[in-house]
Image (cartoon, rainbow, N blue to C red; front, top):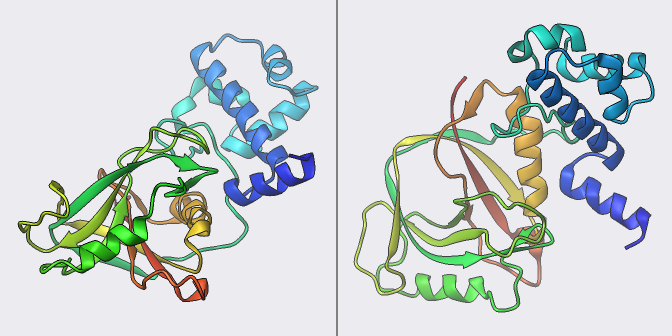
Length: 258
């Protein structure tokens, strides 16, 4: 693709310009090296991280982490952190468009009867040619005992890149009690917990934009942190090919008080 098209797509998927993201990655690299080797020369670290001078590096580092490189060297655990637990020094800028939760809901225990799909295509789930998820949902709703809560999908693992053929997706129906059904024989039990609820109106192809806003804009500034459960999507209105704007998806993010 052309550089212009690539930069436009990158900003749409990641919520920030690629130049800004590259700086965040360089600073993450510098922070990890400084944490692992506290005696490292700051100028050498700056040059090795892609900065042209000690002063430019120190200014960018302090803006990113809230402290100078020398202070960070002595106390790396007291700085600004990113949202991802496995990438705590990757502090990316949030999208400029703000998003707010429509509800903070306490849900009792419920049960997901699911089938499993795999893979993302250009960052989107259910985009393989052989994945007619709408047809499978319709078959579930036609059962004698359809889901008494909602249709949903959840994500046991995070995709490793935009085209990850191996990442699993579970999709099916949420029930208040587990039932006997031949639609699928796999079940997952969600425990009682608190969820931040967000709404996405429109085409499912752009759900990733709402997910990005939640994790990169709302969560860092909320009075909550993630708890150990799977986020999921519930599909409130059926897919309408003639008018995607009528499609409502609710996104549930498992949270607890910070």
